[in-house]
Amino acid sequence: MRRRIVALLAGLLTAGAALTGLPAGASDPLPPLPYPIGPSPSPTPKPKPSPSASPKPKPPPTAAPQDRWALVVGITAYRGNVKDTIGGANDARLVRDVLLKSGWRSDRIRILTDDAATGKAVSEGISWLQRNSSSKTFSFFHYSGHVKQKNGREHLWPVDNAYIADTEVSRVLKSLRGTAWTNISGCEAGGFDEGLSSSRHLFTGSSHVSEKSYEDRNTGYSVWSGMLFDEGLRKKAGDKDGDGGVSVNEAFQYAAPRAKTYTQNQRPHGPQTPQWYGGSGSLNLAAPRI
Image 1 (cartoon, rainbow, N blue to C red):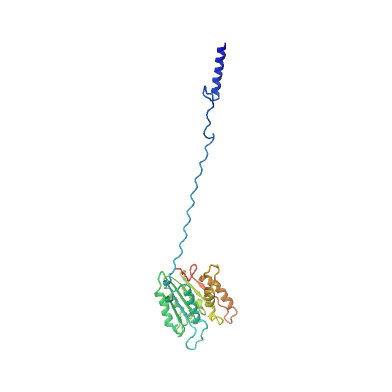
Image 2 (cartoon, rainbow, N blue to C red; image 1 turned 90 degrees about the vertical axis):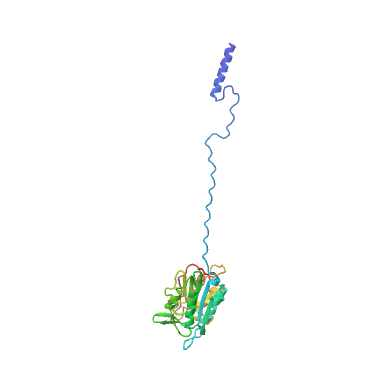
């Protein structure tokens, strides 16, 4: 009887072991799994490589000092029965000084004042600019003096009254290679832009083609040259962004409204309105773009 009871108990123990998932005869449970039961964890995402920074655009090339050429003309004392100007020759000396302070070489600046500024010398000087121009040069032509209106055209008025028509001035200056700036300080100055201005050739003038331009006895300069070159550039009154340098653009923005306001009460011709045609970007005389 005892053997039957022992055998029955042994059978029950074997069945219980099978139900609980333990191996028959095992006295300890299975060792724990090495990780929790459940879905596998997502792998740690790899960091995406940061996009490479866009390369900074290269600054445009600029004309070296030996590749900057200027013809500067200013006439005060005219020959014959012609009223002298107040600031023509002074303007020319002022412009030359601004160029020198901007790093231009003196041997690349041709200045013609008073008796030296004959029609032949001015025409030859404009051709001299053209001959020395290349794809690497920046050329500058400045004129201060009387302007003669004749046969529906504007003419430069050299000291010997040998007028040079706007079409002739433009014909030669348009053939300049590289980049350039032409500035005229005289009556009806805007009329000299005879197809001259373009993206590579800036034209500025002291007044509209229908307006007179004036001079300032207090400064000894023409109103336009004094405000643009002396105040705006040389004295740095045009430094709008406060970076210590003045571009021609900044100087123009400073001088143009002041010139118009300063001359607003002139009679019978009214004020002068400085003109800006062509050009591309900012013009810095210390590093003019080509």
